[in-house]
Image (cartoon, rainbow, N blue to C red; front, top):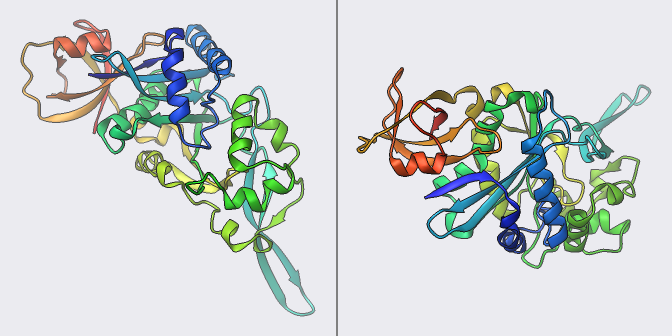
Length: 338
């Protein structure tokens, strides 16, 4: 059975292996022992905190194969983007110029460095083993974060965003970076992303051009990357799009990948998840597949389960499910159909 749970310090060696295998552009998962150790400790402290509002907390989850005692994925929630340091994006909007004498009005798309998305909750760090891509466990890894937000809403903002990794070639070349960022930093795209993971995006972002960049002046290959998703990032996009997230006028300042946005209260797994109580059963007449979580904080657990859910009745769970969720008869649970 696979279970999603908060990261622990003992996970460090396996987590670093996941970092090595992750897609270039997932900068919140650096392949660096000390950085990952600090990220884990920060997450543990966040789960231990008694908070009444969203702040700098970072909630890091891992997906564990209980039988093999092996990590097969990870994902995160940053409670407040831009809380400790600026959160930069590129705003992609039209600039309109007009001439009364010539009776001409013309709009030109332009990219502007901004911090408009600071203050929102940020989903990041999604990575899953290739063998599990496009399975229910990808849904678990991504959406169980949303069930956690539903259970602890006071810890998060009223809007949620995520940055989807933009297009790059198999050789880790980004046409968008080569046309824009590389002019300000003599670094390959992969190295720039690596430095962002080790340090922060701020030191690079603050050296980016402060004035609008007119899109038609970029090479066509770079223009084609604006809002374009890396093929390996498509599943992360699709899952959240089904949750009600939408693209907006913001893109990643390094690779041009799209940003997804949703009001927290409108997200499917938050608005439509059901709550109930657990009841251990020896035999389950399953008729549907569900994401199921307990409503705990630092002992949070979530699984995929075949269940028979009846309105107003306790939810019957097998002994294995109860053990994975760390629940007993009468424990509160949360679930949503897959």
